[in-house]
Length: 321
Image (cartoon, rainbow, N blue to C red; front, side, top):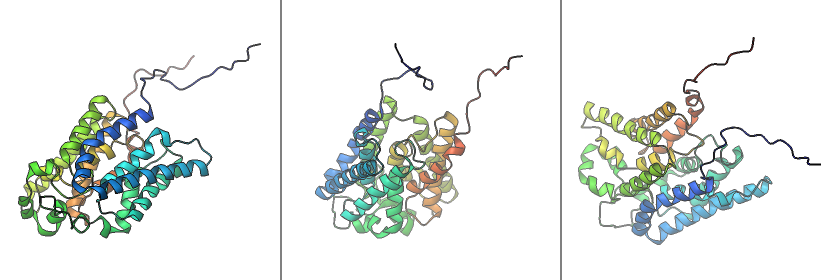
C-alpha cells in the first residue's frame, strides 16, 4: 500500500532558479572591481587582511555549526561574503588579531546566535566592524594606519581632514581622483568607480533592489546639500560626501543585506533615505568621521516597524452566511 503523505508548503511555488549560494557568489564577483584596486594599491598587507578575514569568518561559521549540531552552511557563501566585506572596510595595516576578533564577532554574535542566515536582525559585517571600531578606535584611524604608504596622491583621510580642519581642505582633493580611488580608506571602500560598477551589476541582474541603494544616495545628497547651502563654510558639498568614506559600499553592499532590510517598496525607500540622512547627521554633527556603519545599524533596528507598512490588499474576505 502506498503510504505517501500529503506535503504542503507556503506559496508562492514558482522558483526562479536563484539560490543563496548563487546570489552570494555574484555579490562577491561584484566587489572585485573595487577590491582589486585596493589590493593593487596596498599590496601584500591588504591581501593578508582580506584573506584572513574571509578565512576566519568561514571558520567561525563552521565551528558554530558543529557546536550547535546544525547543518554545515559554509558552502552557501554567506560567511565568506561577510568576511570579505569586513576585510574591505579595514585598513591594510589592521593587525591580525583585530581581523580575527572582528570576523568572529560578525559571524557568531552578528548571525549565528540568532539561528544563522535569515535570522539576524542586524547586518553581521557591520556588527563586527562597529564593535572593533568602538573598542580599538586607533587601529581604525586611516591616517595613522596608512601613514607609511605613498601611493602618489594625498594620503590623508578626506573625512578626517574635513572634520578636523574644515571645508577648505576639500580643495586638496580632486573629485575625479576620489572616484578612481585616489584616497586613503578601507581596502575595498575607496574606489567609487569600482563600487558603482559592482552595484550596477547587482541591480541589473536583480540581486539587489535599486530602491534601497538609490534612496540611500538620495538621502545623502539631499541632506548634505541642505547643510551645504545653509553654511558652505562649515559643511562640504554633497558630491564630496558621496565619493568619500563608506557611502558607496554602504549603498550597494551593506544596506541591501536581505534579512535586516525591508521587502516592500515604500519601506525600502524610507529605509534607504534614513540611512543616508543619518550618515550625514553623524558626519556633520557627531564625533565620528564617517557615519555609514552606525546609520545602517540604526535603520536595521527599526526595520520590523517599516515592514508593517504594506501594500493595500486587493479584494476582501467575505464570511459565509
